[in-house]
Length: 203
Image (cartoon, rainbow, N blue to C red; front, side, top):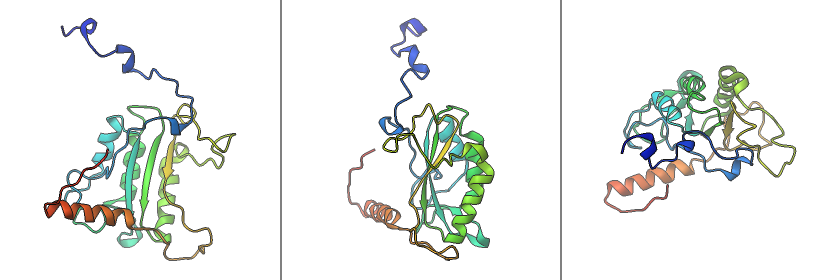
């Protein structure tokens, strides 16, 4: 009963068995929310190990919540909570090491950016220096601007997804207009749970 011939799982599906040449938007992408957290969203530890773990588990989209840290070093943690803080640089080094061990298809960094312009520049420096050629910096995503490139064409590449700063912001600006709405909504929901309110989430 436990032999491969009796397994209900199709052995062909242990490997990629679908056409991976369609636009990226046509696929379900295995994603992680608050990737850096080991436990709850209010008081748990943030660990770079979590990025290594989820990437080796096959996750292709990880979340990085970025905030201004001391000494000009951007940090990653769940804002407005008691979760511990880790360095953005350490997160990117870990992602660089583990991104393509499990799969060669693209990794998406979902950046929730709350940093000042100065620390955003430091983030950009780390992304380009640490990730090197893995970082996709192409200005034209496809010959057809109405379609995203395919997973096949992006093998071995790391993409950055996040909100852009306003086009008219000055080069020497100290702060960017970056919304805190997402984090604030999450905290409000967590507090409702702690107060006994019931809610349903979609995953």
